[in-house]
Length: 566
Ligand code: ARG
Image (cartoon, rainbow, N blue to C red):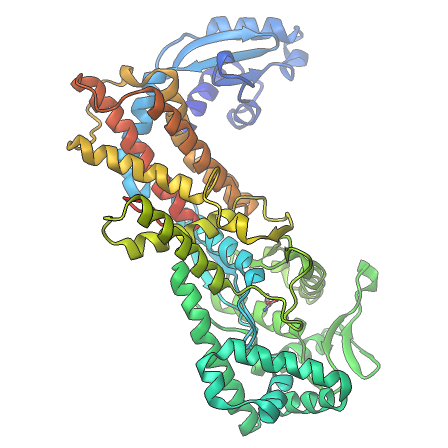
């Protein structure tokens, strides 16, 4: 519909000298119901300039604009000029765009030459990849796809949590109670069990904490045994994470995690010192942020070890030098809001003018029924288990409905994993939510499988038709209300992508594709497609094809596949 809004703005511009084209575009609204037209222009702002009542201005403007080309009717309504777009012209534009651009429909090149970093997922080594991580993983991947689709050079970074005092604890626990074979059989679950045991035992034997700290300092100082164990924990964990990424079809351009910055932190500490930003506080080094209403940023502990924050500072500077980003996005839970506010401030105080190109894209918390997640207490739901169960349930449903389906393994994976992704992206990201198996495995209503099913339905109609959809059709046959509703939505695809991108809100795309699926299903219910009248059949098939392609492209932005049969 972009083109039509532009056509409306152009007509108005020729009548109104006092507003710029862009100002007019900004003012144009969508009327509250369809009977009032497709666009409305409010005249209230013009009352002063024209020294006339808005409704009289609306009347004058409406009378002076001819109904031609993209516009079929112009009427004054109170203080508004309302426009009705030419529905067969709409059908022609939209269908031509989709059928010629195909998989590229919705894409643009507005981001060309700009580098965007999207940092997401970033699980912690030797800890479970649990449902708490699913949000950053799924939201981050969708944000990557949104930017990528608009031509930005987008770099995906997995800032693995592969460093920190917890590795000291793990080394102690492994040396005391672990054995290699058991760990290799089931790395994350075993390492987690060791970690939990460490905390249990340390309650009675607090000296273990001291031992753990000592091992971490050894690791930082390059001790052979510590490094070897750490490398092994890391490799075993990565293998496990990789299984989940493969299942979800998610890739990264870099796995430079926290440990990558080990040798880059001294320089940051020195720079902070040179810029007179560091203060001593009980043996530790801090940046005082009291003036900005925040607790101090802890840079180095009194035993000389560095912190999560120090590594974030080093990483941001490294990334700026390496990728010269236009934006560096961090998809991280809102529990870490303060952490990001603090170190973004430190970057600003260091005099880097790119501090405002760092963006924390936060999201609400996932909890379990009856309480929060806790790695230490073993209250976790593994992401891999969630995906496996979703796939298993999909298999049962599909096997009972459509047992002869080809390629069933791929289909159940696409639908099962898709269901989990879609449900994650169904709400505004900042909302907290409670994980329940029931909700995640429900395929009714506004779910991923419903949208995928609509796509498969389009494919099935096209297969049965046995003829290619073409643009060589009578577009007047698609000017009815059901068709126009579908086509208007399809025409708004790119606009929705841009809003989702600007707000870092993939749920705008989930909403869009649900609306499209619903509008199409209404069309499908009320309008037989494979009719004898060849002209009508061809026109409707073109609409089916445009819908199929747009659903597929929208799901791809969410990181989902669109199976052709299910
Ligand atoms: N590993 C961290 C966690 O699981 C997330 C890392 C977030 N990214 C960052 N640059 N601090 O909580």
